[in-house]
Length: 164
Image 1 (cartoon, helix red, strand yellow):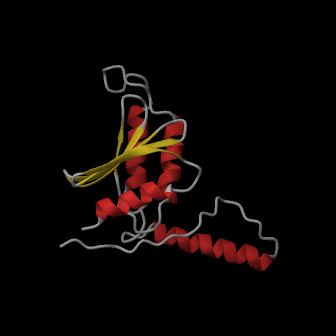
Image 2: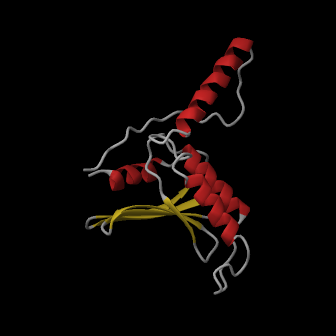
Image 3: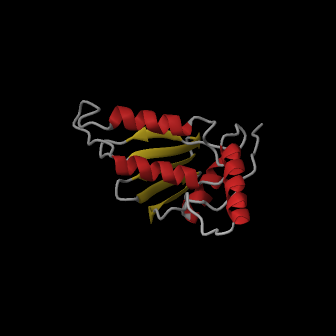
């Protein structure tokens, strides 16, 4: 049996607000605080699932040249920050991906359900999200720029891979 978790979206706050009154600032602060608690929940958030620890470990182990012994490019700070921001932009309830590094210095995020149901997103240092999905006999692939929000096409593919 596969349990489906709800997916809850909330606009990102980005650490700044246009609130001017004390009441507006208080409401914004409280909303961000509670949103953070939801992100840390085991049922809904990626924080509690260890995804960000896994991302940091991959960056730490693969940020020097030749990290694989075969001439691999280092994973850059830009690739790390783009992957971190992309993961933070995913809605609550999004399944956790596996995190890896590629020899070209990109970070890979992979959602795997079975050999015929998977999605791989390659995060480049330039801020591009290269994706390839296999869903039964159907394949989808492409590139989307990352502008601070998860591209809808990639989010839809994550949901499709996770659905029964």
